[in-house]
Image 1 (tube, rainbow, N blue to C red):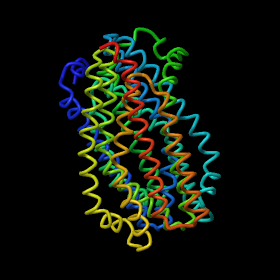
Image 2: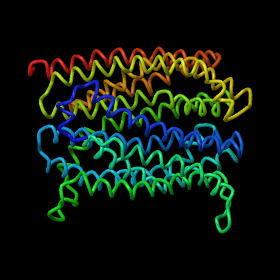
Image 3: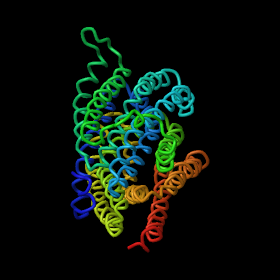
Image 4: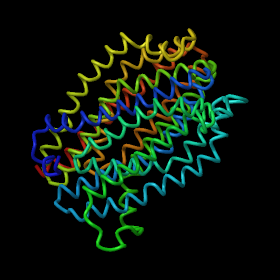
Length: 450
């Protein structure tokens, strides 16, 4: 899709054309993670819990890069909308260097703080060692995640949501083959156990990186005329940080909130952590159409905002919310029918299944609030008004989790189901506030210009 199509084609068609490849890619990415969960379950329930803890901690680290990459998409998309092609390429060149370097820095930080975080989450003895064995390998390969996020941001801004989808599909199938190969070993390849699952992930990300770099430099950047395009530029970095830090902090708070939640869940035992981890992966399958829709919203709004087509910005927001509502209904029905079967497939321990089901039974009703949050966040990023994103994330991910979990788990010592209902209430309050805030910002920023 050409970038000018994003500012001319009708909004419903654009949402479908952009989001469907994104959703397909997210499906393969989610299934990739589920494959890891499945193979870890062949080792032990503690291995499943270790993968769950490590996955959430890693999501905090790569979330920083992901937040910056969405800012890069917004900046490039705005530049395309203004017909400033060279500026778009300049953002891309600077981003390809800057975002991975930020990722490397936080990988080093993660290496030193992860043992303390895992202990805080209740990991001890063999459980702790499994977490560290798995996590450290992922930290070594974090730069590949960062480069891939950056490449995808550039491709998305140009309307290309298929290249990354193809990579994720390849990664899924490659992971099915490589996980048992590195877990159990073959010929000259030693048996690595749980570390083999992590090594498989890093190996696949490295292959994807080589392909995406080739696609980006071949099709989506102006040809460099001098070396300065590759050198650091404080002005560009400041712009990336201005747009990206609120989004990054939002994702970081999501990860920290999940870690805090696991800290409280661990009071119910490691089987509760395993059940939550499995349910969280299953939930991610259901919510991915909404995530794909929010990505499409960011791409469409950033381009049309740059082109000063403000009516299309409003239309995108309301159309996406309407589509999201129906997607949430479909997801809720799916979970009501298949949730228990899917959890049992990964772990047949009845206690693990009960904990996982308690989470999903409540979470199906949270989907409607989440789609509102996702779409509004993408809208604010697209119009370059991201400040509130961090504060809303801080409220619903940190404050809400601490308040509800402390009350339910520590003081009242209630069943875990009350924890899920308390969090549901807090998420809806955040979604309602952000919806009206986004409408107000749009009216102030765009209303007078229409």
